[in-house]
Image (cartoon, rainbow, N blue to C red; front, side, top):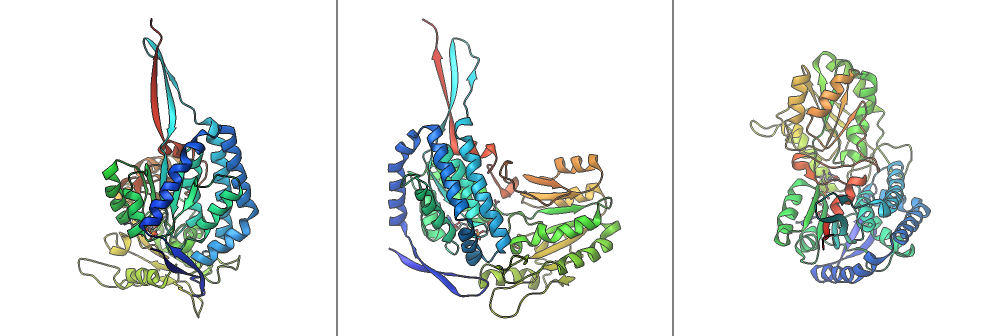
Length: 463
Ligand code: NAD
């Protein structure tokens, strides 16, 4: 049974599209088409598969501005970010096009014969995508899935389906056969759960909240599906007193308020050595004032609105009930940026300082532009605070002491760390979480491993 969802521009609150929402029957029909397309796609010669993927990348480049405008209209992210993300989509497709014929097996020295390994495609991959980076995260799964010979069904978040739908059209225009890359728009509780349980789906590549990830993993267990989970975070940005404080402070807003803080890698806990705490806060206030919030189609703007009114409400709740249990109560903002008047789901960049590590707003993922700044005494204290979370996605270490940078980089339990930088994601390097931020790695050559099974073949040379 199909219904329709109205897609809303979060910066204007205007309806921008009506999209049919699919149910279980349509999800099953999509899976059936995917299975039908599988054998032929798997049989495409490696160089031809790579060529098709390069053509797909070129289609993305040719339609880059259209895709970026679509993403900004749907998610409310600044157009400069959408342009970068669409650029990354093309780069991801080129990268994995180049990997098609380089993902080699091995020959293994054994007694009595020859032993070799093959990387076999899994079959049909279901990709479940969140609303915060719809096109970029879709490409992170489509690239390695197609390169390794799988077919893929993408389920975008119901509120942000536009760029995934357009991407699938561009794949067809590039000559990728029907059924190889499809999109099914539907509710997580209906289509998402169906894909996680469907007996013909070989793998679920999930990005989203830890809570839903837990459910996906449990549903996928019925058919022993391969599962990769890219989940939430509460990453720490650790600033020592020997760091270039001005650089660290100036870089802080982009590290936590980019995409309105609706970023799994948001460094929403800033840990600052007590000796430079006040100096850092003064520098941060200037940096926050320079972090402009407004019309996301303006290329000079740094931050747009929250994705929906309901999400803005959730973010506000982290100030109204910032301390959480025990005791409870609101937290005060030490500094706030400004937002436009009029329509749009605006929320100002907000600094809470000094925050206490046990407060709810310093422990839970806010997914909005709110940062907790917490003082620490020494390296040991910084390590303890950084790791005092069930999450382990990203983080930063700011120091001029190279040995300390390496000690901390090994000690912090997170999948992606940066030193004197807040950058987390590159096409060439692996990305993923530790602890309850998930498992499996996206991007880089590492992603190929979770889209293929290793088959071992022994051939006897005796007799
Ligand atoms: P979400 O978990 O609510 O939804 C993610 C996707 O799962 C959506 O497509 C949704 O429709 C679907 N879904 C919902 N319920 C489902 C169910 N029961 N079974 C199957 N699918 C279901 O997350 P969101 O609000 O869209 O995105 C925000 C979350 O995503 C944050 O926690 C953020 O940290 C996380 N995230 C993680 C990464 C990463 O790479 N680690 C990247 C981006 C976002």
